[in-house]
Length: 195
Image (cartoon, rainbow, N blue to C red; front, side, top):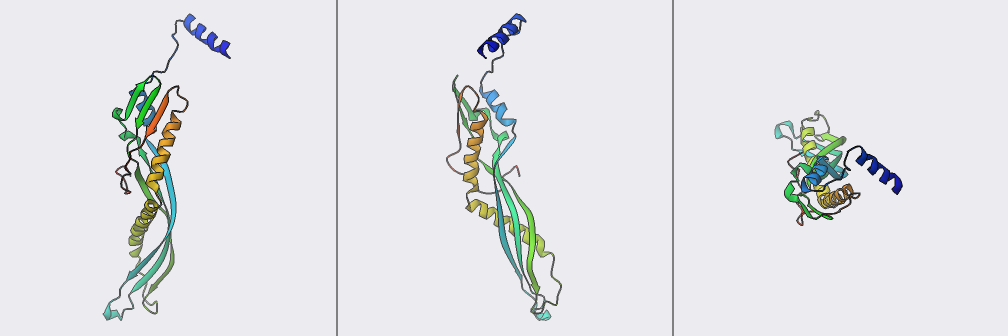
């Protein structure tokens, strides 16, 4: 195998083509990472229950009151917006060591996959038709509950650790040692700007 590599180098020199060497600098490291654009490093899938209650009016003898129980299934995705990475985040110590300081991870999206009506009742005798406008409110509260649960389960911490590992693996075959660091303080667990 060593012989064939030497032959390729000799043929390249004979044809007047210099050998190609990959030069490691901050711009090449940054370009390799930014080509990914966005690194989704964690996705939590969550089921939740939402209860709704609307009081009735006295002139309808409270028969227009409404109670509902809904189940919702959704997912929360978190990771790195790699476009936020700049040359200031990449430091080349010497020809054998590169240090990358990643930007904070963020929540990319909260997505509802499915909402099921478990039970909905109007008044004591279920005489009035259910107010379907409540579904918009249920969707909003379901997303909020799913996000709160993902935050409580540590999605931000998990996404930061997975992002660090995935960026390290991106450079695993390079002939230099790449050390990747995440911010010490975790960012707030809210939907980020790049939704």
